[in-house]
Length: 248
Image 1 (cartoon, rainbow, N blue to C red):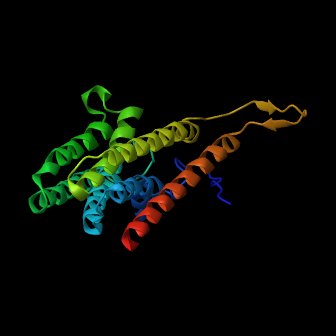
Image 2: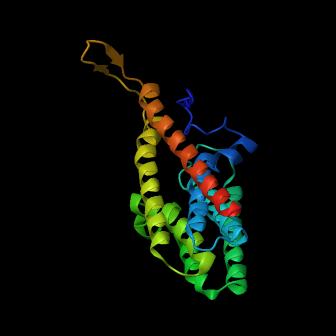
Image 3: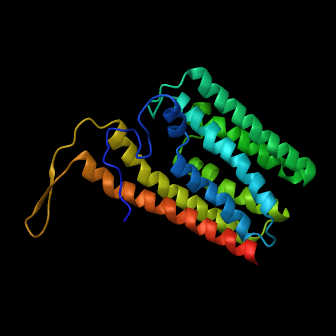
């Protein structure tokens, strides 16, 4: 049975105790990074022709751009995870990882097709625009999160396989958009409870007369269990579809 951790004073259920190497692990948001990278696998698996090498290329680029750069920028903007990493380390991680992701894209464009250049440019722009809340925060919204972290990785991976756009790729991208929107809807109240809520009071009275005291822990737990289950489910689905295509 999946259960959420009880340490409600930590900024996220996957956050380690603050300090040193643990902060580096925490800012990677590993469960959510695995979830988002699964969209790359789902997009590739939906393509008419499956090329594992091309999928791994896109996976590496998004791991660097989203898993490392975007999350380092997010921590740089307000320290939501409360790490003690020096500012220069976060800047180096963000810029170096994004530059490496772009470099992977440029090499892929040279070796495969320049048709992917617009996707490389879009990816390089959306990471700082979203995470640093540039342009007055216009791109820092639930819609842009679902588009950039959900639909975009799936579509990019799908397109890179055959360099064509077909309904299957668009439908998978739309599904990944919806999953990321759900992730955002669930994680937002949890973040508020963990990071901004000082005290919770009240009770829930059931029809049988029993009373449940409301606490931060019992408000957080069911939502985080759902997030963990969704994360495991999406990763398992993506892995299964890739294994299916590899065995075909």
